[in-house]
Image (cartoon, rainbow, N blue to C red; front, side, top):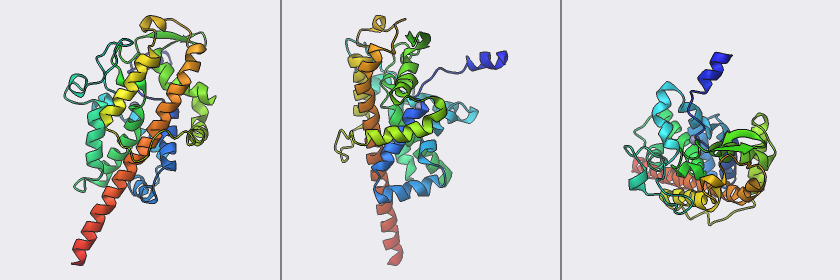
Length: 282
Ligand SMILES: [Zn+2]
């Protein structure tokens, strides 16, 4: 047991929205799918549920064959919160353009690529379901102290770090849930956030724009008082209350935008198929 625990401590620290937020974002997106997007998702996922497919990428990055994808979950903005927040693709998506922005662009290109095998397209879709969610987590668009992993804080009197507070503890508190009931909590939360639509579903802004928005929350809320404002401080009280509007806007936008993205991909796929069928009829 001791050995297992010490091995666990060697694993990279949390680098993703927790499962609860990912499941919620996928379920929220599902509510906005067009009928053809639902068919499209089914044809690529088969019997896998959308909720489970949205968390697959966090398991894959820990497998030997998936390790190369671990840098796809974030972009380390080299900015200076809380004074200035910014994301620049050229400056921050290094080394070798392996950050979340490049990954979303690549996977978007692969998911409808007919030269690829079904399994590869299935993986590309699962990355999109996950990464569009991660891009709406402010500390996934921030490089300072490893996205807050190295900022120690308190939550209900216990030691933790700022990244984990945003990925897991704030969403769990908001839904009054634990890891054990995250599936059910995600269904309820998606239902509540469905009434909080914040933008036109046809607006599919550039992915870099989404990263900039998430990153702006770092200055506005996450690190508003600088590192000293949170370091060794209790965050489950006033800080948590002030974090809720940011959390809900981010998760809600993520679901909405994920749906718009998938709806577009389904449309593109249907057009391609239509062209092909017309070609065969000639
Ligand atoms: Zn992730």
